[in-house]
Amino acid sequence: MFKIMTLEEAVELIQDGDTICVNSFLGIENPVELHEAIYDRYKKTGSPKQLTVVSSAGFGLWNDSGNAEGYIRDGAVDKLICGHFGAMFSTKKLVLEDRFEAYNLPLGCVSHAIRAQAGGIPGALSRVGLDIFVDPRMEGPGINNISKDDSLVKIVEVDGEEFLYYQLPKLTVALIKGTAADRKGNISFDDMYMSGDALSICQAVKANGGKVIVQVDKLVRKPSRPRNAIIPGCLVDAIVVVEKEPLGSGYEALTGSFEIPSGQWDMWVEIIERLSSSQRQNSVVADIIGRRASQELKEDDIVNIGVGIPETVSKYAKQSGMLNKITLTVESGGVGGFPASGPVFGAMIGAASVYDMANQFDLYDNGGLDICFMGALEVDRHGNVNAHRSPGAFAGIGGFANITSRTPVVVFCLSFTAKGLFVEEENGQVSIIQEGAVPKFVKEVTSVSFSGKRAIKNGQKVLYVTERCVFELTDQGLKLIEVYPGIDKERDILSQLSFPVIE
Image (tube, rainbow, N blue to C red; front, side, top):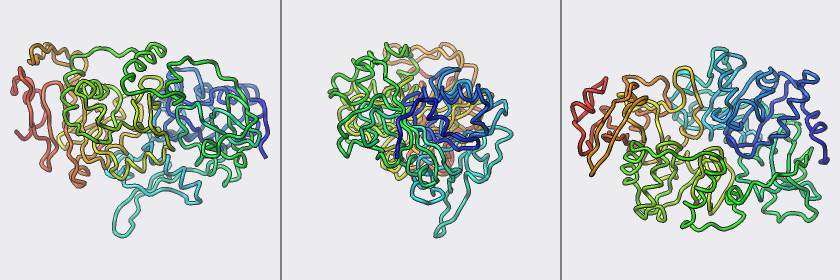
């Protein structure tokens, strides 16, 4: 039977050695006050300690201090298992200092492994991850020198076909953020950007004899409509009420509280960017890439667009009228709206549907998208892409591996070089005024996020769109299929490459 508790009472339910599963998506829907209460308890008593923390999409507030950063930094956590670490600024640095074990698994594979555990199955089978860094025959999921746990990802064979088997430690504590709890303890997510893995996390934790702790904005007398109660009260142990501060209409637009026609998407993007201090920078390079990449869209496509340069695809899709003829999706579960970016990435403006994250990755893993647009740090002569780590820094793979694994058309959007690249475009002519100091097309990528060999085997069409040319993946490597007006093929492309391409 659930109890209404204070923050201090609720975190007393957490024991040394527990495995906490956090339902969040990067910077959104974090139970911030619960994390801070854990830190307060740890500073006073030294407990809870030796924790393992699991999260499909990671958790953080895009800074060094908020949320869980404090108790992770001070030593309460021994192991982290996350799909993405991007919003956890302090934690990312400490991982590379070998302060604790840290593992990076594809976001959707963590989500599916949580759902499997909820159903009494130890782990989840997936083709996602074969031939990329997480494959035990390559690097494995460990990020630093002390992360040697080989139980998380294994190679298995079923009916003659290879899979990866993703297995998480038994989840014993759920930390969830919801909108409201009714008098029976049912938890609704009406004013949330997403529900994520909430139900599966709670089912798994209760099956393992653990504790479910939910932070809500309010209590309501009248039970929520059954379909809106994502977590039934019988699965909840502790409910903590933390009154929500008003966020303004910009953020409320992301909860689906009111209808937003597609014609107003641009307006709401601008409002949200002003609130989040996340103004987009105009970039000739990004504009050239986004305009060319958007030409690959077809009417009725189901689409995922990554962050960074790929976001300009939507700008040109709107200009061409294609934006109203396609369906956009985002990893957290949103379908049929316009993905927000910056600190609220994972939320959606004008979504038609928002369902559980595991269901979204069912769609992605089984080729349900028609096309995706992703960024890249490096591309090599085999068509492999590194999108998750660079020397001395990493963010994590996130949903990238799931999205690109089976999508029929994969378009990578990246500049040809980085650090100092300056480009001008006038009257349709592109000029490289200053070349970047760091090449992005290399003989071998630092780490493999996307396998060219696997893509060829799957029959995927793969394009690499830059500000000066377009490459296509073939079974013999990269083929130069397009050179933009104003670009000198030999000077601006071929002489800049450290490997030959097909012409």
